[in-house]
Image (cartoon, rainbow, N blue to C red):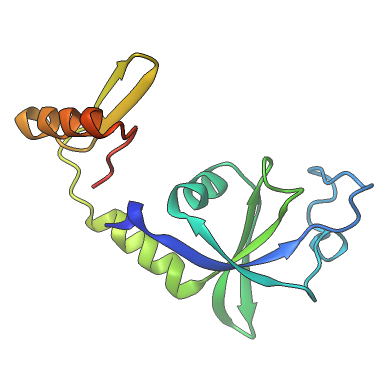
Length: 141
């Protein structure tokens, strides 16, 4: 299932830390990120979702006329770096979301912890009780 995946992507570190990146200059990515010192990192799928949903920079990357991936970060991550996700990875994530069979969602707050499952009915209750026994906060299976 897609929520358990950690995606490997390219991170371009932030440079020019004394300059503020804002909505008026965020298009000048080559001035704020070091494209010469990229490194591969793993990123949880949840972090990728949050970065995409709350994106500060979200740009498609093309080689000639071919789309090869996206550059993305969020307001929260803009001073950490800019992240490149390959086209194949983006397509896989989108297909996994489309194919996910969510029947319902149940959440329970107990003693300051939130337990969540995508299952409904008896299966959902059973999933929540298993999580509580394990002390796990979120079940996304």
